[in-house]
Length: 480
Ligand SMILES: [Fe+2]
Image (cartoon, rainbow, N blue to C red; front, side, top):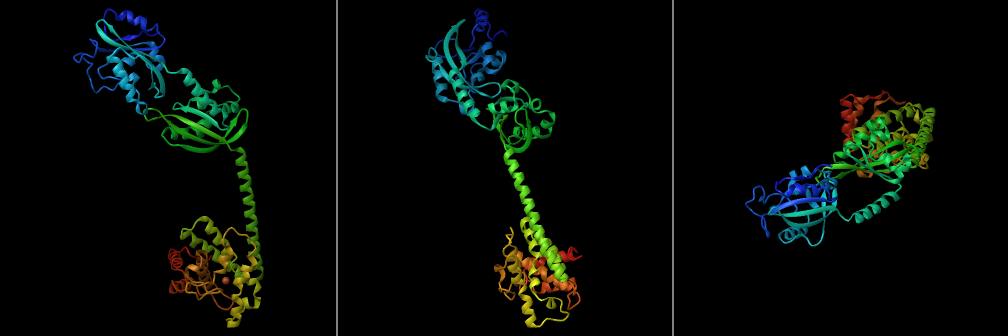
């Protein structure tokens, strides 16, 4: 056992040294002055009004025993070095009323009842202490003898039991990991999952429990983030002795010690293996559904192609351009996908138009043109029962509308036309002009862009035309 530290020499102090370590509780001896009723302000090293302390700046700690080390985790020598700060309550635990009581107790004959007090140990962990103070005169010096023990152990045990109960009723895994990556506390379900005892896990490092590979590749980086003060959430697979391979949703919460630094990570993990399996199944189903939709779209395109190769090629090239324009407009992936699908089948209604009109090598009469115009609503009719996740039928319905209301079938204007409809309308016109038709040769991409620019804001959406022009100038617009 370490010998108690007593800093002031005197005939009685060697005896006191021996006696101090016979006491199990922590004992602190403060010099408070040579005469009853107050401290001697002339005593060197004592009268420092700025010294932080439990009670009175005129005190000086002159003795501490082994019991202090057991309670606070600091040696008696360190206690003397810290002087009054041994008992100092920090931050939220500072209680000015109790400080006053202690001051008055020292001026008179000591405390007539014990005080409970929140102090912090060497790891910044708050600890409740029970304090009694007696004043005595040693070698003509008035001293206060403070006896310290962990307060209300029964109460603390009871509180701990309650918290343990709460933590152990949880189905979630809960652990406390210190900044050396060591388990300090774990709950029952966690212990059972590992098929070990609590003592087998607490005191062990995370690396020992999970193995070096998982620790260094997955766990450590997240814990380090947490020790920097960030709450961290991630999912990973873990192999448990009793449960087998489980997918966990893991959250690390930083725990701050009394001095404001992160001392621990509080870990709460949820077993989401079943949820993960359900999610995987859902993703798989969504993928299959997507394949079905893609298959249906391909079938429509093939059908058009078999009947009218001109239209099929036109749709493919318009889809390519419309997708490029949508990307440059900053639309999200979902919208872009919808535009691609709508553009790929936008002329499907042409299968209702007599093929002689579609392949007529000369200009159409106005009567014939009116028939061709019906392809828009015919297409809507064909696709109306397909439950696309995108506004495909609306986009198709609007692909011949114009900003000034001169389009068909409804004569919609400006904001009545959706963004998708505006994009498709411009791309459709540019491709149609740039390509060869049964009744004329290709006019070329330059002519097509000129037409779009000339009617920018009247027939066609300004933004879409600007993007087409930019794409053309940067040579990104081609129909190969
Ligand atoms: Fe069309």
